[in-house]
Length: 225
Image (cartoon, rainbow, N blue to C red; front, side):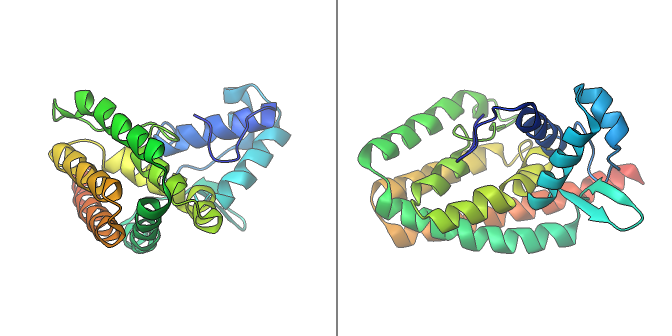
């Protein structure tokens, strides 16, 4: 899935996008050490391309470099979740407010169609997996804000770190149908051009999501013990 101002045309771009996806979806576990040699074999590219990809992933906040340790995938932690979601709640709340003001009627219609397409997966109550990019409800609203600085802060900044928490700890279980209903209410507020309500509902939705992920994170740690 292509992202805002992202065109994977070179081998380096394709490797970066694939490595990012594998990290976000947990194929490469959180906290894992990243070996240039092993990754160059895995993706059949040079170590220079892997090195460039790792540097780009560090700017997405999903990889961290430490002196004398090297590069690692960030660890998913309760403290990290709380800090990240404080920022996410504020910025995505603003995005929802601006989307209610700035999205065109046809864009809102498309948002409703997107949500309807999610229903078949959600009605079973097992999972609410959304691919990255245009088929991600939150991504679509971020773009709908039409604010370049806000889009850059979210999409080029914290989006993929947020997705790590969402994909690995938040897109399955009993909250699935509740999250879908919250999405419907947010879209209704945007459709009604109710900027204040759209922001309130988005902030509340992200707060509930944080609580859910926090519980799942605690449970996953208990299983490891």
